[in-house]
Length: 284
Image (cartoon, rainbow, N blue to C red; front, side, top):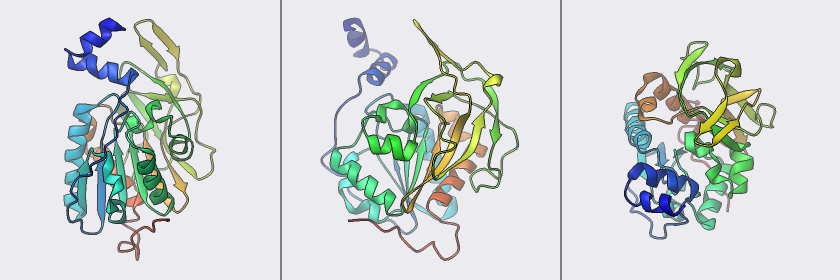
């Protein structure tokens, strides 16, 4: 462990792996200045107290800016958890939890996010937002994600995914099957039959080897039924969870940009007649 700590101080990749196993416990207390946000607005949050998907975050923020400009949405990007100590959530329709890792929020910041989602906010969680570095926030783990990350493949094979809901706004442009390469996450249980859940895409485990192989680790991470993208209703709010998005190339791909655009629009009810100007209620 001492060797790893010393190496981490010199090599960025080793430092990143070290952070994955030893996440920071830093919480922001000084909030950022808030811009003017025209309705509808999207907040992209990408703070990492754990492993940082640096390229994916960089390319994803570019993609979200492009989507927002094309759709006429305003967008604010922050990595400061104290943003949730401000009225920003009263101004936005959708919170994108973009490869967030390592329990980045204080108790009061968590409570603000929970109240906002339950009160009608839209939440989009991407890749690391579904990993086990969030397990200490029980409400997020159990109510938002609904399952616990147990590992991922170390290679990124291109697989045919089943599009379970081709009629969903986030999925209707995709071919069936949808071929995609990524770091494939596994979880301790399927969310398919949980209340309020709709599975949008899933894996056929016969098309690859669901094992995590790293150094001395050789772990069976097969699930059987294996959802990889799903939605769920949370109080008056909506959530979209996608385990895809490990690398920057994912966010450069037009097909995944279309998935994310549809996800944001669905979560924020931005394409539903008569709702575009109705901001989500925030519970006190």
